[in-house]
Image (cartoon, rainbow, N blue to C red):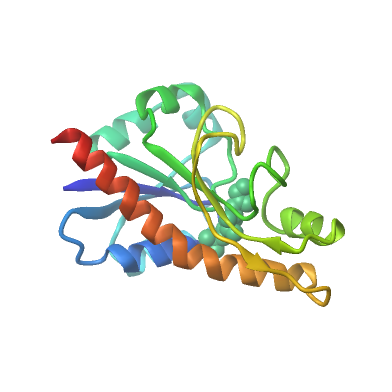
Length: 194
Ligand code: GAR
């Protein structure tokens, strides 16, 4: 079995898509939901799906590093960031080399980096009159949105698309591609083990 932890700060619609995709999967299992916000919608989703959850604070995450113990106890093999807005500290990347992935709501390397999240991304895409957008799934390194790209999906934009329309189009694609990307990376890891 390959055990997955999903980290999310918000509503968790991507987390939901992944949980549903992997429900009853023979080899991959979402074991833990981690959030830095106690009112995050993703925590309700964890309850609904009967998945263990963990609320973290800055001191614990960046200084005490106690999350390692929780991840080890839950035998986590892969960390999936789904709208998690804190920078992943180096100790965690060292502990999970090529075992942390993220989804970003734009075609990286464009529109990435600190401060580029959620509606800020779609506003910038709109302001620059881009003809297309779409999510990027990538490995996580110590810089925001800079790790190796695993896959991208594209959707055309029209002149009539407002930032909210762009957000909706990209999010719909995220729900389609992220669960598949998670499954794919999970399989790579299992093949490496054998
Ligand atoms: C998603 O659009 C994701 O790509 C984005 O946050 C949203 C979370 O939505 N992530 C970033 O902007 C990271 N830089 P969700 O909580 O409904 O899955």
